[in-house]
Image (tube, rainbow, N blue to C red; front, side, top):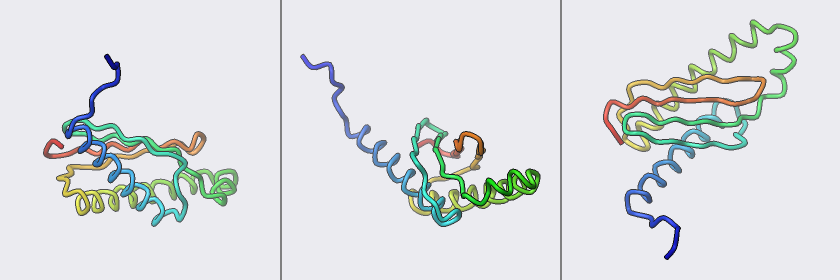
Length: 123
């Protein structure tokens, strides 16, 4: 008897949804930052999608961080807002998701970002 879990059609569907979310996430990231992610992981729940990603920080931002940290943080906030809006549009369009909101934070020291997508209807 195998200890391996049998895959079901539901597993395949959720796996496909995760892959589409990752594709949309990377597409938006590339469009806004012109740079890819190192890795992206997605967890799904009924009304929530959680994305954690390791990003590559734009090289010039390190200089701004050192010279004018408040300006760097302000630019991060503007870019985060643009990312959230673009991801919302892209996921709604590509996956037909009914999204209530997209929340995102980024830690420039670790280059980790956490994104929470709250849905109006379950997956």
